[in-house]
Length: 349
Image (spheres, rainbow, N blue to C red):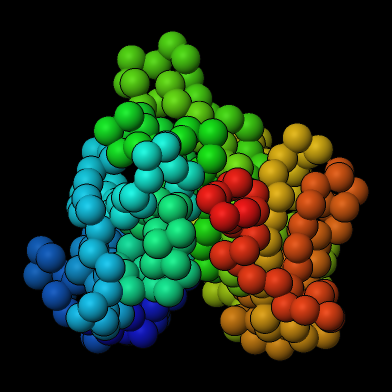
């Protein structure tokens, strides 16, 4: 299934309440018509539960891989499990060094519904870093609706913790780990940069005893916060088509706007609010949101425009964090690789 089809199916299925079926909901009727295999019990009725299972399976199959150059640098360790789910896997490129190396962890985008770590195979930034003495990793994570966004980001945090747990074996310097991502991967990197450390010294799982914090982060087309109810503060009210009915609460694994605005939803939204988490003890950020428009006119701009980036930069300035925003640098365009090497104190800097 092409990713475009998966996206359409996602919209159809997330736009309706969990109790509805194809008998009383037009979108589910359309979903059943286009994807009859989703009706797993073959009773001619598509339920929301059947829709969610079908979408999750398609998400697992549709990894969004890009063509990789035949001469692309191959990972030293591939498909390494860092957690219990089948998508909790990572690839690791080990830089050659007599000393423990810094690590850059790449987190793919795709709206938390698609994408793959393989998108970074053959990536020039990754290869340049490895050749200059910086080890790299690329990770997969669970997709919506298999898990809500707050749990997906904890998958990524666990990947950071797992890499730290392999420090001796993989020659990693635990104190010099950075996160880089695009879109969903960028927002997750911002969350990792700002959220309190998730390390639990008393955990029976040794991975969870490790720190989830990073030294710096690179954010490409980031969102400012995953408390989506805050977006009108800096983007204005969404226009028709920016979101579909029911999409927002399901982003958090909830069933209604009432639940999202209630005590349970407030707690989850705070946990996902990177703007609220940013404080003076957080790390330097490099941001490149190239959709530099006066105001968003479509869903893509609503999700990725420079207003997200400038809102993050404003908060960084308020609390005293270094934030390089490419779109505001008029003299010389800064480069992500240079930023990472500088803040990871990589060799040659």
